Amino acid sequence: MSTQHKKIDPAAVEGDFFRVKDLLSSQERETLERVRTFLAEKVEPTANELWARAESPLHLMDAVRDLEITGLPGDAPGVTGQSPLLKGLISMEMARTDPSFATFYGVHNGLGMGSIRECGSAEQQERWLPQMVRWEKIGAFGLTEPLVGSGTAGGLLTTARREGDTWVLNGEKKWIGNATFADLVVIWARDEADDQVKGFVVERGTPGFTARKLEGKIALRGVQNAHIVLADVRVPEANRLQRAESFRDTARVLKTTRGGVAWFAIGCSMGAYEAARAYAVEREQFGKPIASFQLVQDLLSRMLANITACQALAVRMAGLQADGTLNDAQAALAKMFCTTRMRETVAWAREVFGANGILLEHKAARFFADAEALYSYEGTRDMNSLIVGRAATGISAFV
Ligand code: FAD
Image (cartoon, rainbow, N blue to C red):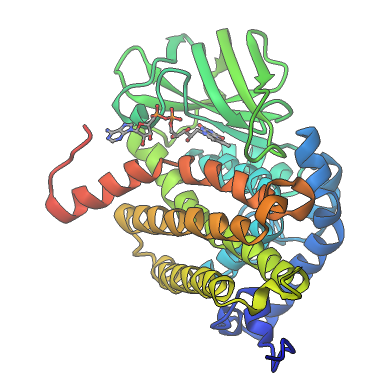
């Protein structure tokens, strides 16, 4: 039997088998191409090294700014709009190259800026967002605590006490991405007076605020996650997000970013699939490329099917976002489904590499490990499933 390739479908080589990118306008495609070139030239070459050293790509901040994709119209003069589909495909491309880079970018552009945009007053938006668009100030989002993860809606232990025009924050936060170097960390805390969750922008250098990098992570090592301690941190009323009155407002920020994680999951799956496909056609056993074995082809087909099913879902999600009708349960279903399929896909990709699949130099290992973090952050698979279950039954199984 000849092992010569008959005809290779370029869309299958890329993992975009149903050519979702063709849905973009030509101008949008140009933007996406610009991002892809940046990722290939600047992010890809050092992704493994930064992952191994557990370092964030801070040296790329100017280059990221120059891409002119940060922020939304209204955040700063000159920011152009992106359709939800383009935004999703940019997230996908970032994660396809490096999920750590995608997360580093998403924490700033999504969670950090999103909190100020959704929950800040016009004055607060004007004060911080333009600098964030230019990456002169980096944002972070502090919700999770050492003792409160999935249950953040049910009661944060971090407290805020008002003293005249000042708020005094006390407590701890865990897992806060970018917080070791961020200039603005949004801290969500329970107001002692009314028990409601409120958001506070804590600026770097505020006395009583410390952020220690979590060591020993086995996923998304290129993202720095911090354990924050807040000991009598005094924040002016001007730094309290004026439109955050309860956890419902925090949830508004999470709804958009959760959809983004679905796109990250697709990108992570694509990166792993593409690495596996390339390896399968090169690696020989029994005198032939392993790609010529039916069982290996079946793994590749199943990976492509997972990616394609998730893309189809995400494209529809982008349509609902464009209409302004995407609800929490739909975003939760997309996050739940795409991260579950991703976990399966990256494991199959790793399998194609045999032992080499656990070596960082072969890339599939990095996607395999990073998938674990995507699966659990922004609400674990289980919590997102329960949000869908609540929408389906009218009964909440978790609070
Ligand atoms: P837990 O809540 O302790 O859950 C443990 C297990 O119990 C999970 O499997 C969960 O699904 C299950 N479980 C819990 N409750 C229920 C229930 N009612 N029913 C069924 N099962 C349940 N947070 C931030 O605020 N800012 C960040 O920037 C940030 N970045 C992160 C980056 C990374 C790499 C990671 C890994 C996490 C990050 N997080 C961040 C935290 C993340 O959002 C939480 O880890 C997540 O919400 C889960 O909380 P937990 O880890 O405390 O797990």
